[in-house]
Length: 86
Image (cartoon, rainbow, N blue to C red; front, side, top):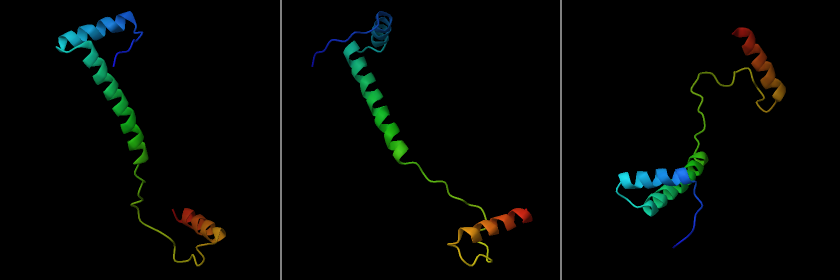
């Protein structure tokens, strides 16, 4: 497919020189560049979706003195007691 692009003159000269050094055409260089850029955008989105959750590998857990784990007050009291022991 043919299209017209407005490209900065110095950028175009650099691209033509680079293409010549690589023994390829300007068209092929532009196609490869667009493909890499588009693929990089998709990869970033995919990697963002696949973030791993941190895993706590420390010791501890709920204290035996906490009888009602659904009570916020009981959990806060236990946390205050642990702060005093450190």
